[in-house]
Amino acid sequence: PARHRHFPRREEDTGLALLKLLLFDIDGTLVDCGGQPKPLFGEALEEVYGVRGNLPGYDFSGKTDPRIVLDLMTAAGVPEPVIRERMTVLRDAYLSRLEQRLEPEHVRILPGVVELLTRLAGRDDVVLALLTGNWERGAGIKLGSVGLRRYFEFGSFGDDQTDRRDLPPVAWARAAEHCGRSFRPEETWIVGDSLLDVDCARAHGIPCLAVATGRTEVEALATAGAWRVVADLSSTRDVLEALDL
Image 1 (cartoon, rainbow, N blue to C red):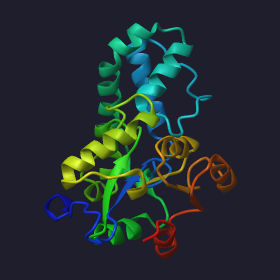
Image 2 (image 1 turned 180 degrees about the vertical axis):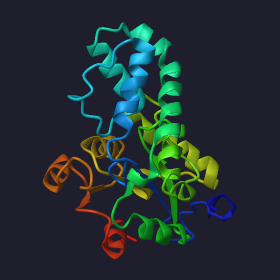
Image 3 (image 1 turned 90 degrees about the vertical axis):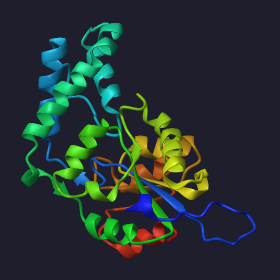
Image 4 (image 1 turned 180 degrees about the horizontal axis):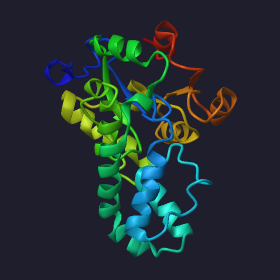
């Protein structure tokens, strides 16, 4: 496990190879849950707030779970103080459903993901972590259902911030604690499938490898300012090259 490996501190005059922090999104990047979470989210919203909101018309892509709740319930007329007061109850109601009813046979690992993560996990010049809008427990449920949780020991999650743009500083702080050294933007990559992944990276000067396995096409991801764009992660060699590895 990464926590037992030695990560050198950055010394400007040592000539050490650059250690890179790779921050992966989950939904649309690593896995496709086959639409299973959305109705469970709706059930939890109705239980806690008495209304589901406009679930069919809402774009979940790149949003944190708390942002989704705030957007849907505000639009449905629920006062923001009430939304925030009941957020923890909503989170637990949703995650209990996800844990009990997510069907692993309908969770698809996206092309190339297992080979890529296995290759990266075996390298000494990279650190793998998550940057996802999922609540941490939900991230574990989704990845654990298909055996991918073991690749990630830490990350930043929807529990930490409401907006995705605010997640990289959390990831950096946890990486510093985990590795015993800090990371600069140029030593970091965000790998994600949505326009908000790209926006999040650009807001902090982080290079972004965008992958078009979610709801956003290659052209749109490139136009949004992703440093590199790939159709999918199926070619480990091409992905490593795109990540300058």
